[in-house]
Length: 305
Image (cartoon, rainbow, N blue to C red):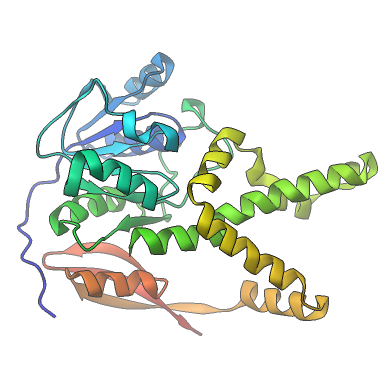
């Protein structure tokens, strides 16, 4: 395979639109690391909180522009703001296909989709945590028309705050997160309501397993609804797989789930060239990129112990 020639360039500044939990945490982490970072939010309190953490507050955006806003606001988040002509646009949305299609209509190949797999059921600037991304997986979309230099700029932002980058296509991302994020939100909602139906005694006895199973549905209902509806097709397919498993004999279901949850895997270190197929192979294997090294990247792939 021939790697794309990618010139070494200084790390560009980062501009974050939306300074709630994810965007505010990203801006704070970058500012703490000494990276030039500009932030903007329609909420004055969020702007003030970010400024107190060393973030420059302004409406002129350049470098890597990160949209950390709710899914319904993605296409309008940059209205009224000034974006430099060479800026790369990325996002932190939990669904990628619809977002990339919508943003691509305005920004073309300047768009590189992203999704850090972190966050909590809390929201807003009061939930900001500069360490939020440390050790997290951060999906960065690599489509057929993605400009590799722009992909690298987004990947390097993720690496700069301690995340591990997972190269993935938008379609692969949406199928995967339907199974491990979107369906769990629906199941948490169903579990909470079913327990409530069982009566006050059931809720009074609820402990760790119930709390773990329902934690995510404490998230803003508007956020959860927008997420699952934007990814309706993959989420319905993933939910159907869950229902099929629930129809199995309970001993087989329990044993199978236990085997998945307790399997032991190790990590095999890899170095791959800056080439689309090679990068995607890391993500598809369940691995991640941890470091940029000239014309290569380093990372790991899982292997059964």
